[in-house]
Image 1 (tube, rainbow, N blue to C red):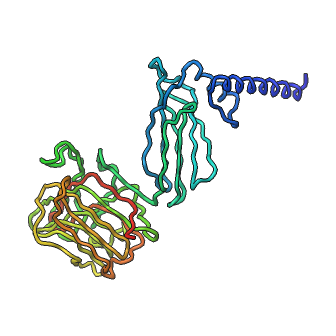
Image 2 (image 1 turned 30 degrees about the vertical axis):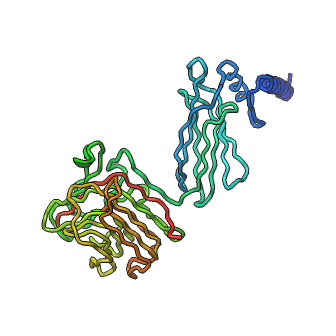
Image 3 (image 1 turned 60 degrees about the vertical axis):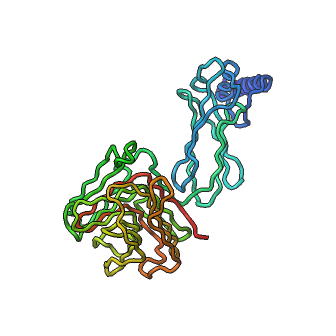
Length: 360
């Protein structure tokens, strides 16, 4: 028999098998799709032995960011308490802006099947639905963000990049198991520097180390901060937006900061002359080693800032303005960072959230 005849014979047999499997699946109400090959159809037959009665469980992140994978997974136990066997099929359907659905097939491994998708454009509406047989396990619908960073639960220095000036400055970065006496169930990151006024340390989330583009959006920066000091001769700590991650001076060129200082707290900035200037501060020093929620909103022409108790509604500082100094107005690229400077800079932080925001 010729090779051509062998190929025709094999294809004929595969067609018969495929049609038979489709008929079997149809008879028993098991879902299949036109792009299923013979092996996928055979895997779906396993649902005859391991029925899926009821919706499967699932997990997913509730946001999507340009260039970062959005992971979705499903899991399902059969009626007798056993997991679906490895090789069982799950189906994921991805749609962007209501367009045609992309069908991605996955198979179970160790009781779970998963799918990942990388969004391309900010502002797109992404939907992902996951099915096990015809039972929906997960449905995600979210607008794709241009950037986002969050470290709500487990905070480690590994998620951050230290940028300091000068390069010889002695900066200590460590993880602490107990944030403070009022917040003893949570860990945090501690950053401190040795005595020396013209020095600064900035901790930038590594995923944002290339900067955040604000040409089409604003930014919201929130975190739990514990102001501290390593020398009472002078200290400053808080959150800030840098205009560069390549420092040529400990105050760089353009910095907008929400900080805690000896005897006061509030908004300050510096420009090309490296001088530290006040936008607005209020008297009254924050309790050292306490826990406070720092929040900063900025979109180039508007700024808002608050410092409050880390979990209740007590507000210690608030300010907003649509009139910003020229030095820090309309920064199109910023580097969100935790900062320390002056003689005895020291800080602890956790629960950082950085996301797009608009004042409109």
